[in-house]
Length: 569
Ligand code: ADP
Ligand code: MG
Image (cartoon, rainbow, N blue to C red; front, top):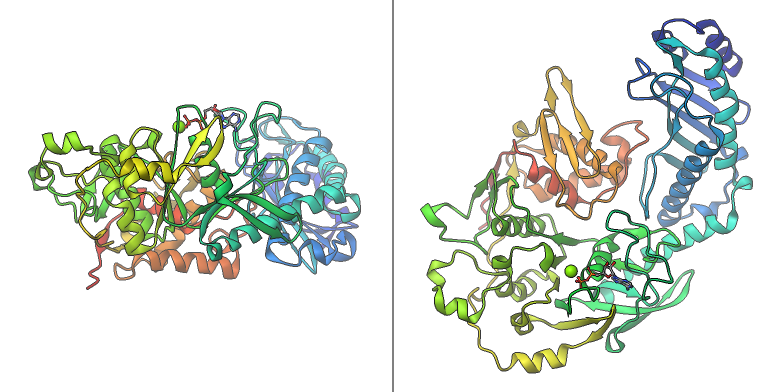
């Protein structure tokens, strides 16, 4: 380790020289209260910014052990410190200091969810933070004086104010930690109560606009209030008693007039796989970790997915047991999305009529009379929802405002009226008694055929280099391919997408044309659990945790993917 004075001398020495001279400052420096590592130096002022790591020893940072004594608390603390660092970087860095990214000090920026991230780590030895630095330049010449200001004034101010326990707002810190711990507790408690989701009373579900995750102002929002017959109460470790609506295992419908809050409720359940920050409104809205939003996604790629439980007898005898498409239709894409979700281990499917293919969801009595079963390749979801639950234990929550046929197969019917739910199950069942739609799905759901990918089709090489990049939250550049994730609705953060890009590439090592995809997903997630996200991309500060479901979604949408179906007799 070098003395900090050496860094200052070096920056003075290279002042005014060509930008490449910055390469000389790589290394580890002893600052008074922390260690600073210049880990990666950018090639020019317009390239990806440089990477810096700071370690603050425990004697200095002094976090009490109860701020990270279990996984929930640890993840929350790391998330909180990332937010503090981001805020203080805005406050203490001078910003633009020349060409390109000159002057930038930035860290991964969390949104409404609390995710495991590689931006900050903590253990009994201390805190580690990983962030980006735009090494300053005028034109392509090193701006040494400016760099000295950044390293010796700005970074220390940010570090001292973000990573020293004594300088943090304890109330906000503990609120963050306790909220996260409660949400994990609540999610873990769902299954033993026979629930797949819980929506706390007083929750604020609607968002401010269609393009942000920030809550609608409290004055404008109707707080959630459970239907009386569905009320559940939990004793949370920090918050105490929390009441709200429990959504049971089985087939659940959300009905109600247009604009009465059906989709908003479903969206909240969808994101209940994540914990939310204090003030979000969804702090006590949780769903089981295997909840998967399903939608139609025409145009997607499909590689040998067995969609025969839903679709058979296509024109021209096209095979649906090994269905392939470069450009799937609404119904075939929705069928593939379901089968692939089941293959990847889904526990509960969430479906909204707004984003579904109509002919995939319903086929009413009149249509059954006009078009014979033999002439209709599609078995609609209504004829498989019950069987899916009976055969595989996979529940569903369906937003259906337009078809009462679904009453036949529902265990629970929740009606939304002016954003307030009520239990309409009995009334719906009474009405259902009078109709006689033919059941067309058979007695069983049908087989879910596992597939085994070949590593050859998962190649991110572009020329001599491997190219793996997120493009916003909803796309990945994978070598020369683009993986389109716009319909993967439960991805919320670009750092998840970035991590998934690396995980797809990492997963190749388990792809041998023998091992099934579920096994591969489990192996990758196990490695991450054991060794952290660093196993898929070491020393990055810009990765966030993700589920195997979303990893599967990315693999399945890679247009060069090739698989072999596995026989499972
Ligand atoms: P639906 O799916 O039943 O047609 P949406 O869920 O799309 O209805 O909601 C319609 C509108 O009402 C949206 O703009 C949404 O943000 C707003 N909204 C939803 N829930 C609430 C609520 N609890 N309080 C206030 N506005 C809400
Ligand atoms: Mg809707």
